[in-house]
Image (cartoon, rainbow, N blue to C red; front, top):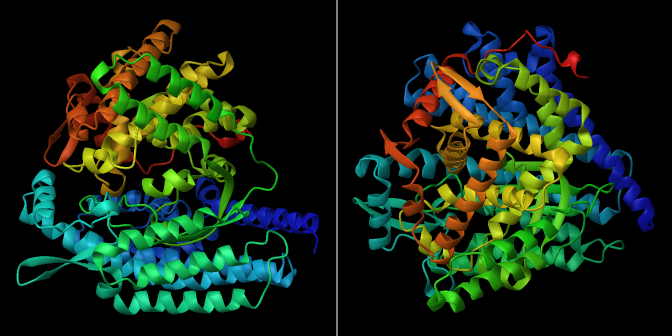
Length: 627
């Protein structure tokens, strides 16, 4: 097979996956049109969770969200409103995970069947799909045990033991050497281990020691995967041995029993992975959002397929680099620290220059991915690896657009934003696809570039002493993209950038009590500070007023540039993240809230509304009005 034919096969598979996801997204359409007979999969899930007796559109919407968007926050809200106990909610969440896992495993098997039946790709890359799938089945089982042990057991024990005081938990972990040791014998910013309790004393053990059976199953399947690849040749990209070396390093990392050698082993995984640059990108355990205390790396496993039709279309990187240099040169820098700052600036700049960008779709996904997929991602998180090899950015723009269009209209949106704002945004979403992609480049891909800025290999560890680094890092990332736009504005995009920022800030309030996405909730609250400060938003008499006049836009633009300079200095000085957070947020009853009373009133108002009507459909407007 020549490369042109191979690329044609990739396009065929990419189209098949897009159609498959479109058909799954149609569950929302069936609900909107009250075609209940076409929601048999939802009835099965409701029965599995013992929710069939009280099923209505709100319950159906939450269950569709669980299957389609892989999020369980709507389901949890439904369960809380039904007065389910915490134990019942945990049990139902796991049952839902298992149902969704089986559903998507079947969808992924269909992709493999389609590829094999149509003799697409070369034997080597057919084995890549099959191998990723076989490993993925075992990864999903490992994730269930990982989540049950760390998130639902150990972490809840720590919360209870230390009265939900995160700073006390971190102090305990650090003082008792319960955080993984990384490069140069330094405390690492993440862990590839978990805690076990032995006679009221916690010990740190690697995954294979705690989840022995599940991890050995993963390792055995990796070995089968490698054996299948050895039999074939990669005549297209000549990366056979890069894939094999990568998989071999995964076996070694999963087999490691010495906690203090795990970070090094996994850094070798990341290094080998960075050398693979084909359109078939495997995603291994990389992120650590779920575990807020030890940052245990979650059990992710997936295959991303690069879009053969669109690559290197993103122009945001040039604007990010220009912005980064401009902001750095206009900071009020202490001359005594200029050398130190220059080193961090150079570190970030070199990382930007080594970026590999993949505009992709998630072809198959497993494990922790069944609790949510990324809209984009920049990895690896190991800055020692990135210093040498760079990073990969994955952006799933077509997938996100399709998903956004499929979501139903909700009463909550109507009550908060008003129909005028929503009509404007829906016209943009459904009728201005080219501009939508430009906004995605600026805000989402710009966000991923923003993660790279102002950091070196030790920034996160030093700034995370109180466990709050991620709680300002997501705001820093998004604001990087916004400031790069403000310094290089396109007139026809200003309104859309502003509206997107408003929607993002407000919608993130719904995640107030979802621990896995706490950093995004905190990000939203800081965005609200700017939107209220610039008078774009005001809350009075239980009514949100939106004023996007030119003067208010200019005020917001200045606010973002100024707060970004403040944030840049905070990072350059490697101050604890809590110091920055404390300027805008306070913690009450275990949840972050704005310090500004007017904003807090709005956040309380919105969240109360979300609890009451967050799953109710708005039938006063139809997608047919925009399509």
